[in-house]
Image 1 (cartoon, rainbow, N blue to C red):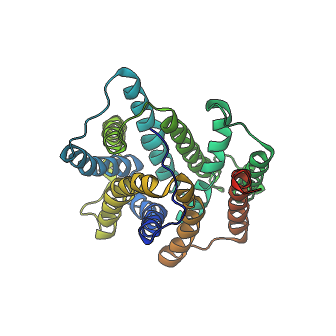
Image 2 (tube, rainbow, N blue to C red; image 1 turned 60 degrees about the vertical axis):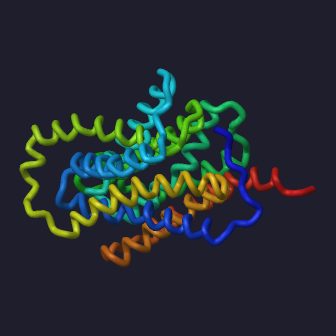
Image 3 (tube, rainbow, N blue to C red; image 1 turned 45 degrees about the horizontal axis):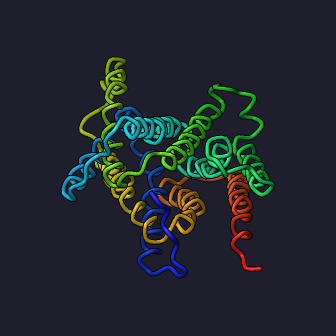
Length: 312
């Protein structure tokens, strides 16, 4: 699928969709935090994927779209379903049992830098350059600031959130791998691919949900659920997953990937602000320093591309 050509000037609809994506994806951490207090991660992930599939599949069918044929496209879709949906959703949701939503958003900002490192090995022509290496090291130093030396001394202990933070970072790396797979996959319609991938991820989540039920996790869920938890699940499934996916692909088509990449700066900032406003979270100076270093790393890594496009 050829990459969309970015327009020289962006219209109001482009900025509206960009802000909408920031709100839907950046707020997902807040609503995940609300849901995970009362529900096991496996149930949240399965419900989120199932709701998204119920929206995307009828929409794709109504437009007369069908999944791509052949073994190779399906192998890519299964891989993206696992690495781009099931695993990161599960890892991030599990990690949010122990860490704030704002901190989760900050940790997720490492995703574009992880993608740069992975692309060096997996995509021809995407070699690491001095700008990209500098940006990666700057962003990685931000992660070290976030984790803190005291957390490194208590691996998996009750006194520190080291393992949950690693789970969120692993989720960010999963998204990086998924973006590489999406670039390498055979050409196919974006909406039908999104619908197929979501259905596959929802089906693959069922064994995990069954294992959670067998372990008694579902028995500990007290009914009826508060409306806040029900609303959080609806937001995650219908807005943060289904609607956001549609808006994302549409914005890529209209405005181009460079414009959309501004999400990497906006989402962690929004995640911190909304966590403070609605959950009373208190980010530390270390969190803010770490966020600054990660965003600076993204900025530095992108400078080579801007300089390459600059007129002589």
